[in-house]
Length: 367
Image (tube, rainbow, N blue to C red):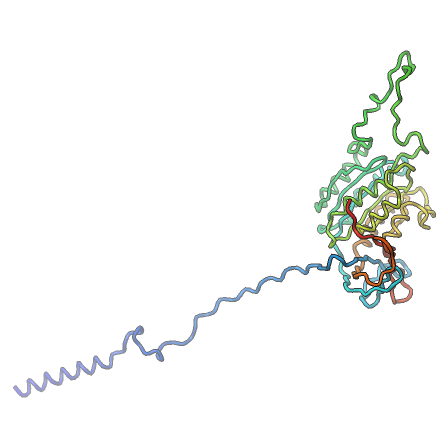
């Protein structure tokens, strides 16, 4: 019996010892025994930086400036310290400086009253105008003789611009009726006849432009019309009027040259023009023609061409010149001018360079 109890006691002690050495389940294990390695962290996505915005105060005067070397090439390496700006003869502090290209808002203004030989040259080159504009630019198309008319509103679709120019080239007169809205057709304007003679007492209906010097187009009105279109475009865009014309006009414009130039100044619009001539027109290049009278004060340019090939190259040259300008910004101080219009002068410290900038500006006024 003693041996039996001894064996049972030994079995009982071995079972207890086995229970004490059993490894506890993970959920009950001591915290120090658990793994301290954290799960892999998810990659943190960096927020994308918004595009750099061109910001300036509303009372800052913006002055686009073109600088060329003696050979006529654009100068791209100038800094803010190279420029000086004067308003009404008083130097101003330049607060803003941009040397990157601004997107363009352009009105392409096509002369519809050219002599037949010049008109054909323009038509042959029209398609090339679209090549000078990029996807960031917006372009409207206007045709004019006695009256301007929009044939394509502002669009960033360069294909649409190209298609419209091609349509005009194919059908020059199909897209524009430039008579006064509501004016009857030629048949309706003819007075009644009896046996080939005008009926006595029937008033004749005059056609505008036929009783003066024979020129029936209004360039001042067309430029004014285009400036009004550009007036509402953003200040963060380069605003230009791109004219293809021979520069002639009659005397009976609704808007005078002075009125139109003031509007160009107040809306910060520059005029670039291709003068279509049968030979180089020295009067235009010397600043005595109407195209130069608009281009020079607004900081634009005018060039002359007499062949379709020259026209095609000049279209691209002028749009490149308009795009690659410096832009200076200043808040007027110590001004001596009177009224809402002021004179401007831009100088470059580096010698031997030609500077083109608008010669004045006018405070915006309601239209």
